[in-house]
Image 1 (cartoon, rainbow, N blue to C red):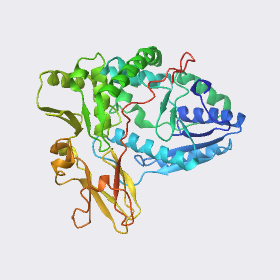
Image 2: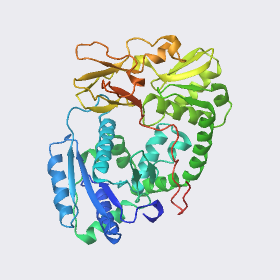
Image 3: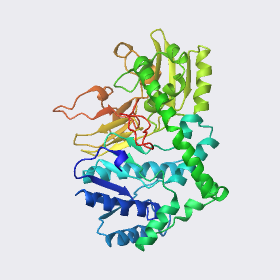
Image 4: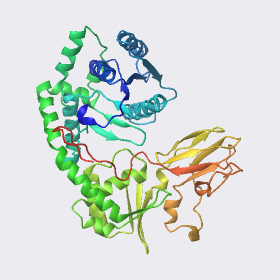
Length: 411
C-alpha cells in the first residue's frame, strides 16, 4: 500500500469481496492497514445471481467479516445482463456498482484482490489473443478513474501466501466453481498451467511495465498533437502524422476506444490492419464501432451510426450513460427516450460529416416524437430540456501504466 500512495490522513477504503480466498485475505489485510491509520473500511460484494448459491455465499462472506468488525454491503444485480459475452457484461456491471458504492461511502480507493497467478493468467490470455507487448504487461497495480483509484496491492503475492494468511487467522472462504469451468478462458488456463508457470508469467508481465509506460507517454504526446476533440465526441485526427509515428497505432487505438465508448482499444492486430488500410488513402473505413471519414477539411472520427442501437428510458429526474459515451439527464416532468438521431443536423451547424452526426444522441417522447434535435448542446434552463454530455468510459489519455514494483512512482 505504501507504494500506491498518496492516501488521505484517515483513508476511506472499499474492498471488492467475492467471498473467495483472495478477496477475503485482501479485506482482512486492509482492515489492519486502515485501523492503524484511523481510517474506515467497507467491504462490498456484488451478487450477479448467476448461480443459485451466490446469495448464500455473499451472506456468508458478511458473517465471516463481521467477526473482525468489518462492515459489509451486498449489491444485487437487477435486470438482464447485456447481450453477448456474459462474463464481460457481468464484469462491467460489477465495476459500475462498485464505483457507486465508493461514491456512496465517500471513498477514493477501491481495492481488488488480484494476485501473482491472476497476473500470469491475464498475460497468458492476452498472449493467446495476440495483444502485443502492451497487453502482455497485463494489469496495472494502480489505475486512476474519474471518481476513484483502482488499487491491486497483491499483484506480486502468490496465492499460497494468501491461503497461509487466512489459515493463520482461521478464516474460511467460498470457491466459485465457474472459475474452474473449462468453458471459461481462465478455467482452461488453470487446468493447463501450474501455479509456478502462472507465477513466472506474472513476473514477466511486471518486467514489461516500464517499456509500456514509456510507449504510453509517447502516445499521449502524439494524441495531444494530432487529435482535435469536439464536445460532441467527434474528433478531427491528423491521420498522416499518426501514420508516420512509431506509436501511431496504439495512439489511434486509444482514440477509437474513447470515441467508441469502449473501455479498451481494439486488439493490436486489428489496429495494424486499419493502419494498412489508411495508408492506401481511402475515403473512409471502420473499426471498433467507429467510422473514419475523410473530407476536404481532413479526417474525422466518431461512432459508426449503424452500430448505435441502445434506447435508454429516463424517468423524470433520471440520468444514465448512453452508448458508453454520453451522460444523459432528464430534469423535466415527463419520461424521455434517448436514442441516436434520425437525421443529421444542417451542414452549416457542423464541421464533421453527416454520417457521424447521425450517431449522436437525441431525445424522444414515449410516442416516438423527437423533442430536441440539438438538445445535446443546450444548457438546462427554465424549460428543463434534457441534456447529454460527452463523458466516455475511457479517457483519451490517462495517468499511464503505473510503475510500483521497484517502489518508483511516475506522475
